[in-house]
Length: 309
Image (cartoon, rainbow, N blue to C red):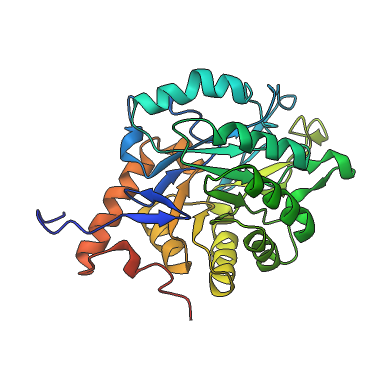
């Protein structure tokens, strides 16, 4: 239990965004917060990262879209969302009413779409920052993911940087050969922080039907199964890149969160774990305070990067 008067400082700065604590909800796992308000106070979180937002409404992929896997899940939602205008008209005002710090995850099929989205959000009151989903296919270049090539990542981040004065946080895909090169390209293009990691590509097969389970065949693997990969990549990037890191990938306990901080994450995002324990983010905030007190530490800053040689 925490001792009154000795509460440590959990405040962090993530690429220019001042957060009361380092625990955020990951894009696509908390919706727009409305479904959780009976259990979680959005204002008590470091920030809410809303589900991926596109210029126009998207219906997403055909079902089935989610399948459970050992120590995780596969999802192929396909960025289903009502579009940026509906988000600004309907969802952002509700989040602002609850006092949430809001980071908007954006996705596009071209560099111009990313830039247009950033420009729209730049003029919107109540948006603290932009997380850039660069794990999207670039339709102008045959479907190659922006996040699979440093040059493509640099191009989209640079375009977003030119379109907004808001802090921008590219979210890196782990499905690459050199994660440090990807982070360096984003830093060179003007990113304020790095978010990592997005889901790993995977699939499941129905052995009775002899067909892939997911309607989209492939999906993104998340949950505890990917935690060791996420930790390794954060550790690598922290050693080489001079930007704060928003770390996520399989966090299911305060112990996990502490590991991510020690690997170099300034803040952490809670995703799949929320589906299992809807109040997990709140429990981790309290758990981080308890950890710091029990180790006679005054600030979360004292453990960030502590394991990096």
